[in-house]
Length: 85
Image 1 (cartoon, rainbow, N blue to C red):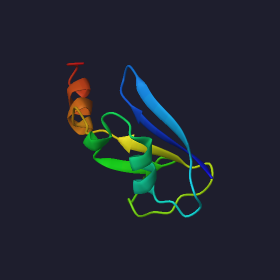
Image 2 (cartoon, helix red, strand yellow):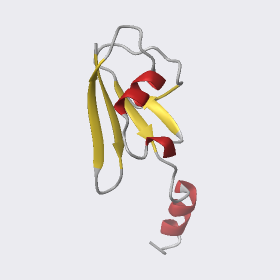
Image 3 (cartoon, helix red, strand yellow):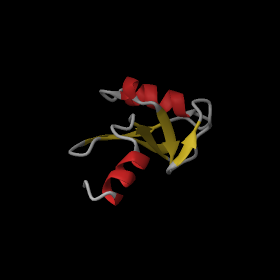
């Protein structure tokens, strides 16, 4: 089966397309992709839905490695509402 593993930043991204055995897990795919910075990921998602490391993958799945937030979205909205862009 074929899966994609992606790690993105605002100005760049890393992407690996892997051929894996049926029944492979999210954790196994991430390990095999060996992306720089993958260890800093705070969570993983499959097609945008939060995934557990032991979750089995299907052909065509896209695994996104999620980075920590740099700013609190609620605080950003409050600042914009006050006019402090």
